[in-house]
Image (cartoon, one colour):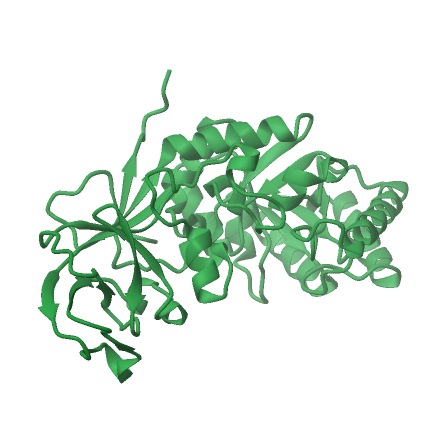
Length: 389
C-alpha cells in the first residue's frame, strides 16, 4: 500500500495532497445522479493512486453502500483495516485465495466454471457459503461469461451450488466497453444483451441482491443503465471519464489529488544550452532553468517530455527536454523564483494550475493513468479528513 501521512513532519520533496472533503462531496453528487440505485466506490489500485483505506472510509462516510476492488489482496487489506461493509472483488486467478475471501464476507465475481468449482470447494472447507456475483460478457470481451450455452451452464451450476448451501448468488453484472463515447452503438447493444441475460438467470431462479453494469461514464450519462447499483471509479476522484463525456465541473465533481514538488535549483544559463538527456531542448536565448525533483520513477510520464505543464510562481511552464527518472527541468524564461518555490503539476485547476486531464493530453494518454501511476516515493498528504457536520 502507498505510504500515507496526514501532515508533513518535514519539508517534502514532493507530495500528493488528497482532499477527502472533495471525495465525500463527489460521492454525494454521484449518488444524487443515480437516485434509486446504491453506489459502489471503486478503490482498486490503491484508490487510483489516492490511498485505498482513507478514500474507502471517506466514501462510506458519504453514503457509498459498497466498495469494489480488482484483486483479492486489495479487498482483504480493506477488511484488515476494519472496513466491514459490502465489498466486491472481481479479478480472480486459479488458486484464490477463495477461502480467505469467503471467511471475510467478500463478494467474489465468477466468469466461468473453473472459478465456480474452486469457490465451492473452498466453501466446503470453510463451512460457510460464498457470496458470488456472476459476470456476463455483454460485449467488452474481457472477463465475463459468454451468452448462450456458457451462461446457461454457469447459471445452472451456481443454482445447484446455492441449493446445496455452498454459495449465495448475490449479484449479476457486466461492464461497458464504450460508455465514455456517447452514442457509440455498442452501448445500446450491451444494455440490451445484459437485460436478456438477466432475464434468463432470473427465469431460472436467480434472485440477486444487485444487478449492475454502470461504470462512471454510464452513471453520469446513461440513467437507464443504473439498475440496482452503480460502480463509480474515476468520477469518485473528481476526474471525468473522458473529455467527450464532459468536464468534472459539468457534473459538479472536484478533482481530489493535487501533485506538487518544491523547486530544487534555479540557475541562469546562456542561449544554446542543452537541457536533459539527448538535448531535445536547447535554450533559445539566455534564460533561467528550474529543477523539479520528480521524474518517471515517481510516475511522471516520460511521454510528456517537452509538453507537460507545470504552474510555477503563478505562471504555466512546460517540461523542457526529457523527463528523467528523478527530475525534470522547466524553462523559467528569466524569472528567478526562490529555491523551494512550489511547482504544481496538477490539481483541481481553480488556482490556475494544470489538471490531470492536461497531463493526459500532453502525454497522449488518459487521466486515469496520470493519477494511478503516481508512485510510492510521493507521500499522500490527507486534508479534510474529518467529515464536516
